[in-house]
Length: 423
Image 1 (tube, rainbow, N blue to C red):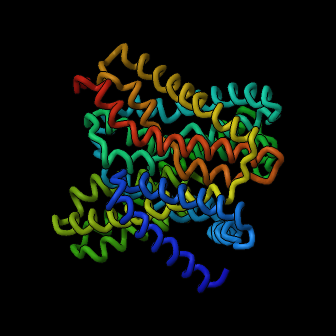
Image 2: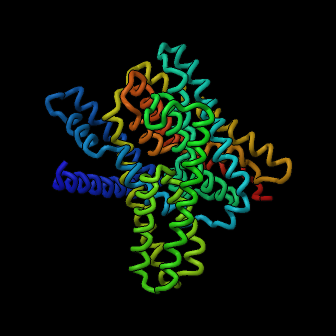
Image 3: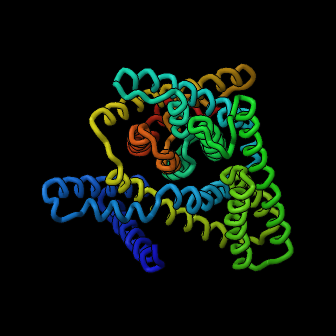
């Protein structure tokens, strides 16, 4: 793909994001990212209808070609994700996060693993009943890519929803960390499913070792990189240069993580938490903090708009048959049930020693949105007879999650969080 083609694609997507954002703000009044997604989805459906009625126009093929050039999974996982995770982590209060570290850590590890197994179990037997015989190993991969909540989607919705502070910290903190853990778990299970020669014949011990290596290595790299940037920023007071240092931190950390085969998402999240808390407090002037927050808020808003626009258009590139549509509908309650069990278990267990905000289980369950990361991981699956089915299921769950759950989470919060008491 030439430089001119890349520029033209970026220009078209930025122009569409701006246009759809204006339409939503002017008339629909939905949360910004959800509004863009809904309008892009409606546009996609209109294009598919036009293609069916007037195939000679070739609208569908034109959009598919553009989406293939974008390479959604590569663009998100190796491009946008690092910036979005860093921007989100910058605004998370570390002290509040540490106060709830046991619940967040449990949800991001035990909760993800439990949800992965539950989704795999129900989907394996459910798909078999529909004559969509997906192997158990690939059902586990589906569970791993659909179980983690998406920090981009979650934090995008939290901007527009009033949630008790303690509960908001749990939701945001869990989404930041379980995303990184989920990507690592997905990588391990996919290696097992396809017999990845790069990882050899992975047994249980080998899989656990790889999981720990990627997770611990990512956290360690994030701490090291964040501290290095912190030391540099502490010696200067020049907001333009300090912002440039944070850009270098994000891109460099993610690149190094990829080459060291440790978790890039976890590394960027840890670096973002370090800079967002210790960096802002001890290495920046008030003016620098204001400029940094403004810059990364703008980056977050622009990239979020482009991401949700791409999700809305991605339906044109996905083949969905009637059985796949039925499988996607079946997956929605399965994923919600698995999420409820994986949230309720840790909260009930830890709740024996401390009290939680009323309605925590319901809000964490319904507020556990899936987003572009799940779609990207599904698109990144190697070619197989089961990939189209897994992709259709993932896309269906993501759309339901963002549109239905995202638009109704505020009502759930108002209904179940009658008393804002916290441990």
